[in-house]
Image (cartoon, rainbow, N blue to C red; front, top):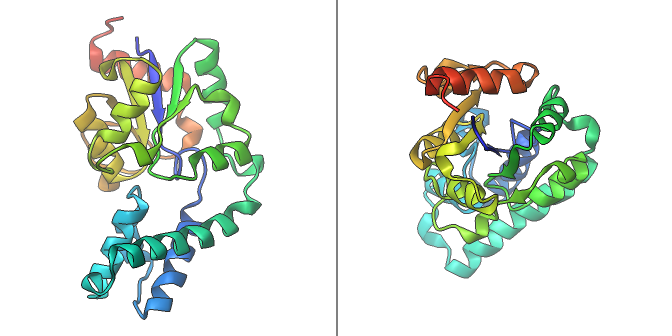
Amino acid sequence: MFKGVLFDLDGVLTDTAEYHYLAWKELANHLGIHIDRDFNEQLKGVSREDSLTLILKHGNQLDQFSKEEFAQLAKQKNDLYVEMIQKVSPKDVYPGILALLSDLKAQNIAISLASASKNGPVLLKKLGLLPYFDAIANPAEIKNGKPAPDIFLLAAEKIKVPIDQCIGIEDAKAGIQGIKASGAYPIGVGTPEELGKDLSLVPNTTQLTFNFLVNSWETSHGNKN
């Protein structure tokens, strides 16, 4: 039986992806770079700094900014995003998530946040989910963002559960790759076309139940406890 669950935030607990897109688009427009929703798919699950790098590469402007200017651009985007998410509230929690978190707590399963967002603690508080989480992995403490496994390894370390006894839940391809690389068991929210056919999937969070996690784990691990 698994002992810990490592949650992504955007696209799993709630949807702040639209706010990320609007903030990045506003910054890109300011720089004279055009990005659209298709391009934005590359940014899902990716850290702020890596997302900015992709946008600047897209606009052939990567070499035009010093480290200090790059950091200022990243801050500018985050300021826009933080302003937008002030309206987030418990009503924005995805269907089924509260029941899943409650069931995990009732079974003494440790819960950790493994999000690339440095705003994770703020969002969990606004969503009313902070009391359910035993730990939050700070992306500022890791060397490499998703698809590297670093954030998942840190999230497991924070709850003192061996990574191979953890389930990781993600909605982005980069995140699924990170879970697999870490040694945790991956569960995806999305389609096989988006995330792959070699893992347990639910089309949306209404089907992301405690029983689904247990059944997926036991099927994969041969009913071993």
